[in-house]
Image 1 (tube, rainbow, N blue to C red):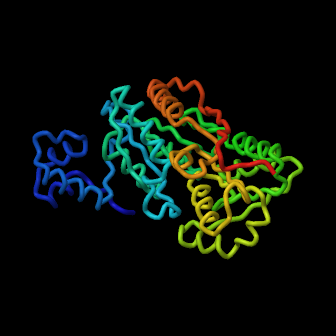
Image 2 (cartoon, rainbow, N blue to C red; image 1 turned 180 degrees about the vertical axis):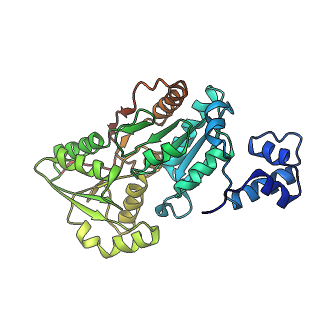
Image 3 (cartoon, rainbow, N blue to C red; image 1 turned 180 degrees about the horizontal axis):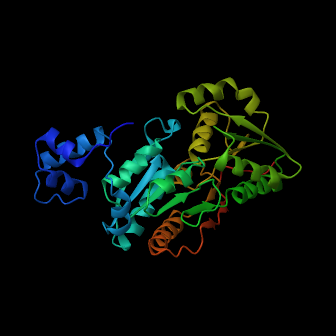
Length: 333
């Protein structure tokens, strides 16, 4: 069995006092040099130190720090914080947390164990998790004693976790219904997977389109591979009069690809996205998309964290509405 790393071990290795190490762990660094703080933090991270009293400390102390952990999925290619949806969510969370006198710290990782170390190291009051589709939240709950809120989680209702979801199915339904009413009978959905959020959006599109033909094309996660993929499948894509991409990022990328290959949007193919990010508003033609309110979700996240700290979570699952935003990337056929 691997031996737990102790504060005294860290102190001895660095040649500092145990009080210095303890103060760094708990954020009391005013009287410690920046160099020493950095050395202690780096060794704590290297040794994967988690305080033995983390559960008690994190549930009782009031650091006013809320950690936001974003899933650094391979599809972001090391640029997850540049993603328009992620940046909009972080921006809204930052200002809502500041209104309640909280500080926000951000971490990007795919490793669940990193979430526990992150929360323990900084003695946080709570966490907000973005982009994790896994059903492992209950196991994470058992490892941590601080409240956390999940964006778009897929797990059974748990009164100790707040799951803030948007109505992805209804958003897809609104797209399918609109395209059907605009005369489109052959609709192509594009996404890099067929699970969780993306599946709900595409299933909704099929339901809204009713008798129309709605097919799915799985695209690569790498941008360079996607562009090659689109070129290889261009003949197939041109068989459809409308494309529904499960995110604005994919929709705008495809929109520009089509136009660069002399396929005007929406004259030959209509394109619809999802999220109503800044990308959808600044492209040409402006993108028809499904809008979700980042500020509304951020407000709900902060309120849920406060309720969880008091042990009075009123709604473990909160389903926020979405609406179709009509712009110039769709035409009637």
